[in-house]
Amino acid sequence: MFARMAVWKRLTLLVSIAGIGLISLASLALVEFAKLEVEAKSVARQVPAVRYAQRIIVRALDVRSQLLLALQHNPAIPEIVQLHDHPLQMHLDAARKSANELRDGVQQLLLAAPETRHEQSAKLQALEVAIEQFETQGVQPIIKLFETGRYAEANVLILKRTHPLYHQLKAL
Image 1 (cartoon, one colour):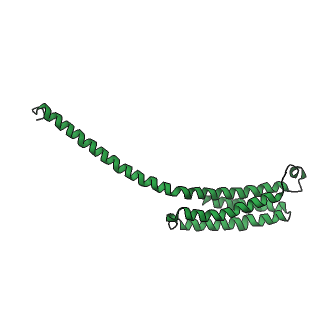
Image 2 (cartoon, rainbow, N blue to C red):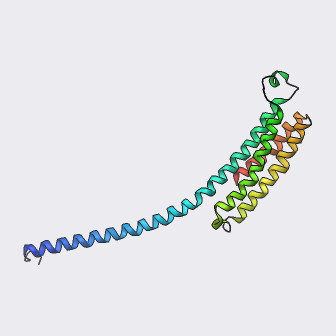
Image 3 (cartoon, one colour):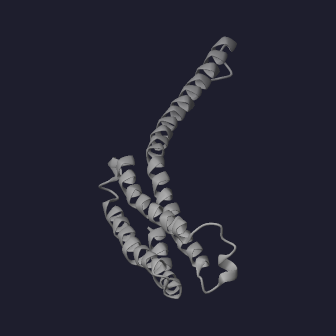
């Protein structure tokens, strides 16, 4: 049947079939691009929340680092203390500041992604509890120990409390 058709009819049929194929492919591509756009917008909405979550982890790491650096001010090891050109209070103030920023980070996290508040409410509550424990059990007692000159006890508390609480916080 195709062989008996005139050349212009065959050519018209082929061009029509190719046109229908191209329109079908273009339609499929547009549908996939629309799906991709929806996913990209969803990811873009989550970026600020991810940044704040990372900031919380960095602040917790800062607290831990400052407490560890404070150990180097132990007067029982004068050769190390002599290497420092700053007081112990600098590390304690930096630890307090970062601990305060931890609490602020949770509020910023809630403000950054209000639409995920209901979906992530259990995780956010767990994060708030972990930050509270980190601060009350792992930071404040150690700062008090440093302020009273009890460096050995502070070292033990860092290892037994602060490190596990930091890793618990980081896991959330």
